[in-house]
Image (spheres, rainbow, N blue to C red):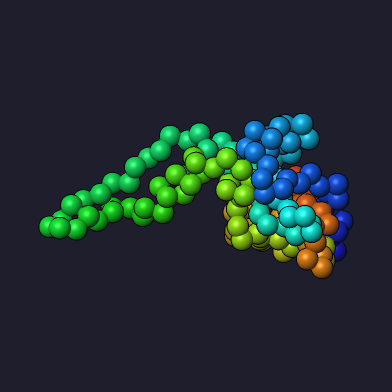
Length: 151
């Protein structure tokens, strides 16, 4: 049975929390990757920044629709999306932009478990963590390769 250890990339490009958005973008372009784990000095994964995160920093803000009723202001839709847009637009470092908490797997996670996590959590990059440290990264292409090799 194929597991994360079999398909993960072991030479992982990482960023530290203070890495600028420009440097993150350059890392992704230079290494032809679409996501970067953010790690502290001890190698602990703090979060992940993806190409989509960087793109979203330039997204046009969509203000939530509100209705005034008596002395109250009611949001027609959740204001959380707007708050998230503002947070991303103001981000200048990996720490401010990264996804947390980190969705990760262990080296023994099966291909089926990895695929299930990716689809249910809506993530495309999974850090592989063993004993609290980053040992690899699994992306969508790695999963597709694993499925093709199993068949």
